[in-house]
Length: 257
Image (cartoon, rainbow, N blue to C red; front, top):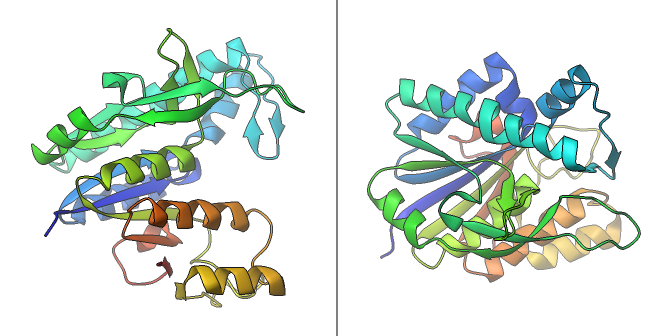
């Protein structure tokens, strides 16, 4: 039987506010077994960019990353946010190691090609090399991954944290029994977006197709769930969508093959 590993992805809002970060660090520290944390940090990047006189441009929730913006997100994601999390985990006796995709060549990306929009220095994940990562995890080191990758030619690339979590979970599924947890601002996937208690507890691919057809699942939740089913097809055992404050509980939406 393969050892269990939990990959948890949290958005910037959770790790950027003192009270929610404290709860996250307490809850994450209490999770038993091997684990990996992937985080965002967009609100902090926008705030610091503004203080530096750099305008933040977003298209469909994605940040346009020019050269100056890349400097900001590198400082914020790989530095400020990442090291705050690492220091907080160390204070809780969790031996955390902060990483970008460039460290140990863990995640290599290609710069997103220009189609309708030029996103600038934004990366689409090409390869995840988990050989050293697996060794570190088995030695008791907890990776804390920032949403940055590299192209292998010296350029860092701003990369979606959901994508990093999904691709890392898929790669680690070759060595572990992986559960992937996406933390959102809702309790799970909802039957009624206006009713926070209408959580769908279990979701299969057949259910998903039916709910999309009925208009119950729509908008930005569709690509999130498509990514979840791709992870399952690639060997991840289970995907959970829940609140960050519920990562130790049995709630949320569990997605299975």
